Amino acid sequence: MHNWICLILFLLIQNMFPKENLLSFENLPDKIFINTETTLTCKFKNSQVASIKKWTWRIELRNHIDTFTLIQEDSISGTEQSQWLFTVDSIPDYANYGDFYHYNGNYHCQYSGYLIVFAEDLNGNYYSLVIDIIIIGKSVDHLPSWYCCNGDFVAITDGEKIIHKNESLSYTCHFFDDDETGDHADYWNWRFFTFNENGKYIINTTDSLYGLNSSIWEFKFDSLDNHFNYIRDSLNDIYAFITVNTHNDNLHLDNDMNEIKILATPLTVDNTQIIHSADFTLYPNYPNPFNPRTIISWQLPVSCKVELSIYNILGQDVAKPVNEEQSAGLHKVEFNASALPSGIYIYSLKTGSVEQSKKMLLLR
Image 1 (tube, rainbow, N blue to C red):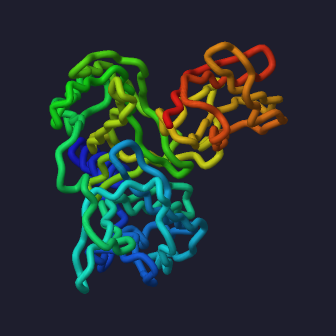
Image 2: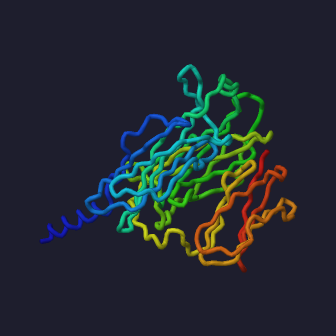
Image 3: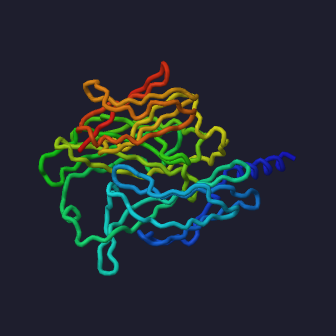
């Protein structure tokens, strides 16, 4: 009798926490070309138990400093699989291409990114899948000079690529004066983040770590909020990123980003709890440093009057992007600082008697 009970419990646990992802991509192309109609397919492997009621597709482009959403489509139907028909019409100028692809006699800008799918079944369970992709952009007449020349750069050289919850972590980034001009770094910003169905999710961040030639970030990775559906790879590990941004004494930006796997069991999400939090939270803006736009986001536990103000280093009020009643949940706004000079700014969020502030750096 005892053995039967153990077997039943084992099967239940296997069903609750499968070792492989229940989503899979079918016949993915090696590359996605700009201005070309593309069809992608994702299948659900557990359709005999539950059916999918909603799919969300997203492409995130990465550069060395951050990631941003290139294209997204929500509420796509399909009980057992989803097909996404789309065309990448253009790629923003602020997207940094890191390589080139040669075909038909021309060089084309090559971008690295991530294809992400979120799915929700009829039982209220959530699934996700992420995979690396390459996007081929516009053609160029010749390779730019920076592609062939040396220059300053930073690189994350130490740190775990596979981590667990409740683990003490240490990451090291070095500044390399490759053009031998005597430059050094004088500001370091670290960020540890992943994605969920609402967008980017900041796990941890720190500003103003100083060091001329290197920076070390040590922190304790305690846990993740279980109310979110985080992006996962084919083995159901959570996909996350460590980024570091720095500028040298000549205000030249350098940055690097590493992919991290978080080994964790799959999560079941209560749809009514996705955007609610027990605390009022103002998140670090991203990107930071920025030029001239950045995203500021915050979490509200209840509906209330919200004032978001921007101050310069002298304490002068230079902008008020938000001044309105808002509902409980996650909110964000894009702040455009095109009319402001370079420098450190303070953004402050006030809701009744509660106020939180953070620093951000505008670099021209």
